[in-house]
Image 1 (cartoon, rainbow, N blue to C red):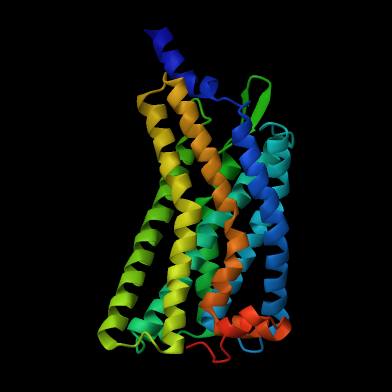
Image 2 (cartoon, rainbow, N blue to C red):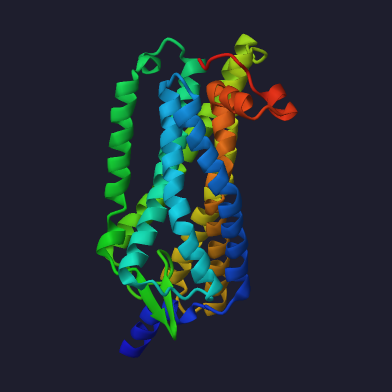
Length: 324
């Protein structure tokens, strides 16, 4: 009986197939694409925010914080590329494993938080234009952003207090999910936060999208330029949010379920691990897609981009009008 319990406790580690080339090749492609596209795009966006925008409004400040979160990801990506090139073997030590996972997780949580806030800002501007939320000052936006950063960082503290480096054969694994013999309590808190921080904002984004579309149909306002931009902003944020984060959440939950209820089914477990690892690669694409959010969420950003790099495509999509 004791032997069976020990087998079930250790199976999840021994089931991991670290030699699966698909699990490492796809993330390599995604991560390298992220560096080639995301880094120049983020640097360009930073330049526009800092040197081309003369007036900052609250939603501009939230977009700027979304950009800052992207740099945490970009600073972590080279180490993940190296790890996948080595077949999943982490060679940078335990401390940097914890810090690297901490930075990646803070990026994810902060990105979700600020994407949601930007979408809510567009929602209130259109559906509730006279609400007091629309009158918050830039100073209040700074305090709100600081509070969001503090909250995000506190929820990711488990990465700095838990040993996140594990050995499977001769390979050192630096993972958050699916690689613990016995899951520490701190990481269980992270799993709950990982799931909740997706579903709650996702449902909120769907609500905002539905309410905006319904409100505009009733009032026949969908042809107004500023209103149309607000619709596009919320829809783009919802699409990027769903594409980048939903696959990893669904496969992560499936992996945890198999680990808990079918610990000896290594074939299915490895299949889910493969899907989870591939879907994690999609989350890295978010910073490469964020410039699209900046363009659709802010006419000021779009106009500054057009003035800096005038192209026919931008001439047709950007407006000189200030954001509402």
